[in-house]
Image (cartoon, rainbow, N blue to C red; front, top):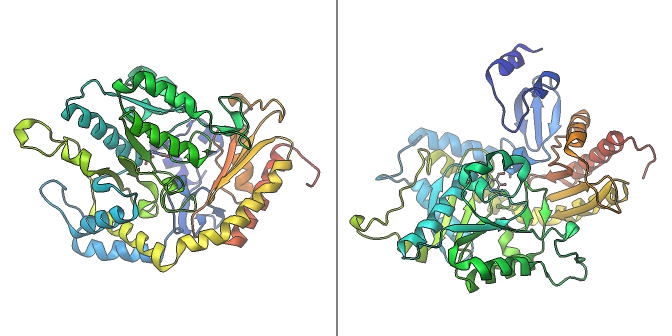
Length: 451
Ligand SMILES: Cc1ncc(COP(=O)(O)O)c(C=O)c1O
């Protein structure tokens, strides 16, 4: 074993990893990255088909991003963000307010997706405390939702595999079945349904709204839950219900933000206005940790008072609004404009979606779904019954290892193989990656015939 990997195994505990597996499959020592490719110390490259956990936007090592870091480092590395401020944060806040849904007018900085979510939950909770509705202290969210790994974020999550062990630590929250069209909770077909599953949310809100502070939802894609893509109409109705039942709407765009779905923000498909919105990951094009929670004037005003009124939001993180990270986020927004990134995405998306079509014919593929540069292939044991593979079968691990042999980083979420391309991906790269992934599935399931 490489001496670096020996040290890695001696000192490091990796996230989302059964460390015992590393004895057989040690991590890959990465030394550089360019565009959509990661290079290891042996000179091999791998396609980063999942944007390094869904955060890389413009490709690795983008020259404008590097320049922004170098420039900012020359003047200010970091400063505490209470009692002090700086231009990169001010400029970034102004720009984010300009591109996010109408009504969002204040920006609260933190440093990762989970903290952006915790901030939103606490803001909503304290809003109701500050305005005399102390009974509104619970949250409502979807099955299959994922909002991060801190205790609050897990409390509103719905992916048992990740969080079940910690359930005794959670605060109580309400869950409703997700609009998972392939496994419809009200037994309808998407082609002919009228989003009847929204009644499940309404039923719960009707009964419990007086106790509920907010609905938190990932717009259009339940990402970690298995890249479950749901109709924009559902989100629109959910937003209307939040208004009707006087609860906040928190949009968690941590994964879907910054062009991934084909629009800058997924919520644009539903044309809705949230009370709070969480952004992280792609905010810095996946280069440095930075997150924001945006909110409305109305929520902000509920905290704005003389200090003895005890309405202050006592929440913050050491690296809130780090100037280097803010400068990078500004550079990333500039790249969107200068390189006409969303236009380019629009041009490559049809090729991608078309390329996914042939996966449908494979015998163990239950559903193929896609939105923008996100594509998912749900694997099933039996197409008719939609029976999933069990965890013990470890098909994800099998596919991951085969993927590496084809130079692809594929990290299935349970039974869902997915692509989460950086926005710089080229037509040719998409074709190569899809051909490679097709081969991976054929080999993993021992399918000989060419389809
Ligand atoms: C929708 C969503 N929210 C929140 C998070 C948490 O972000 P982080 O991993 O930066 O804490 C994630 C992470 O995958 C996510 O997908």
